[in-house]
Image: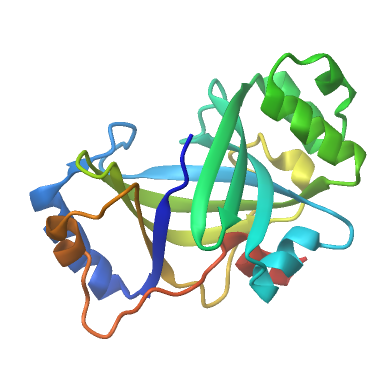
Length: 222
């Protein structure tokens, strides 16, 4: 596992069209997309004190967040994910979950995790025992591109939606609401270096990297 660099940009719909055209010419579409895109469903966890949310808003240099996630309404592949950020660099770890295990987590039932042989599941179990709890559903549509040199991944996320009934997480048709004024988000991630061909492709006049959290944006609703 290694920490990766990450840039985030707020972009317009016109920007997205330009970027997709440029990236299609130099990078490959993620193999997991359908018709060039896929839908992401996530359930985020936080403390009653909203520590993860406050750390993000306050720009704490060392922070972490936990979520469970599936794609394209496919409940056969569900992952527990931990995302860490240290001085601007990112690290993501994941572990597979069965549908029944994810359902238990969405309902706040986690005692089964104590018997897991997976280190990330056991870490998550300890955090749940310490007060971490299901907080909010976050969903969005993603277009993704990959470029092998530098292990680059470029994603464009839009149609960000949220739901507050965490028990509905495994129901792809659960009621969610569009996040008001949510921008389109361009994310660029890479390892040791970012190739010039990708740097040029994602360059947009007047756009500068900045901070944005889909989790924080959705927490406006609860």
